[in-house]
Image (tube, rainbow, N blue to C red; front, side):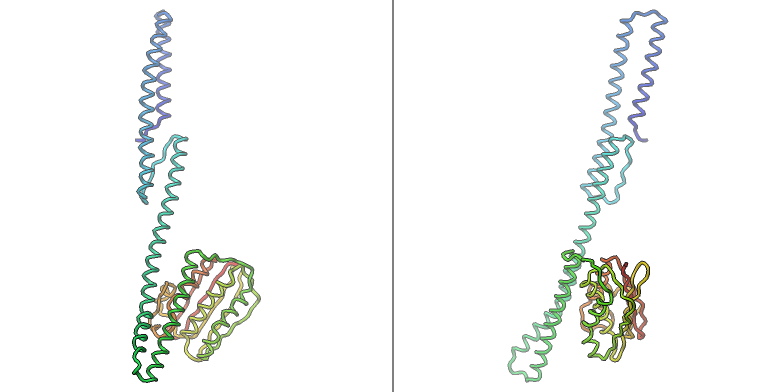
Length: 337
């Protein structure tokens, strides 16, 4: 049962008034002199003061214990702590502020833990990704030190070494983009931009790769859609998806890019008739460094789609994917108008 200081105080005051009234009536009835009345009244006041001091002491002990528990929960960062509500207005305000501080510190603690786990995961992923190309470079370097190997083999190993250097350079560049975006070093700066211009820039960046595989890229230009977005980073997001489509579309395939404006958002569809994605993998393709089954022979490190989702989500948008094996995929980007 909770102790209520106000109720206790009211109770003692009522009892005291009743006793005082009864004494006054009794003294008047007995014709006891005024001096005796003052003495008895003083004794009662002293007794009442002692009782009030005792009650107040108990009450303050109760409050201090509760506040001590609150402070202890802050220092321990106990996420499941539930605080009882104090009835006293002034002290309940103090408790409210302390609890608010507790919630802020808990949120900061959760964020720090999440960031620490992300850093551990990132370091593990980076070390894993760098291990293979660095091992290959070391192997090719040792082989090329042998001057007795035939020229054809020398040229082949030299070409492979150059390819590994390019892969390592691409990996490092991608990881720099990812880390700068995740850490908030780069802030997305929205400006009024034509989505048609953004799509055309992204398509031009993929053009050579598509041409080498005789892949046709169609851009169905509709009405000019103007959005408040970061032009460079949104171009990066769209490029990564079109580039991914070009990787997994066979020779003589087709990639179609459409843009549509609705009342509340704009939609960009990137459709290909490539190899498609297994349904069980769709939820994983946006994970950092994820490489799907059968992608071992394709260039890339599994960062592109992850970056695309991060960029679009930072602009309050999202990406949906529909895909069927051996039929192709549709990546739909939704961005608020």
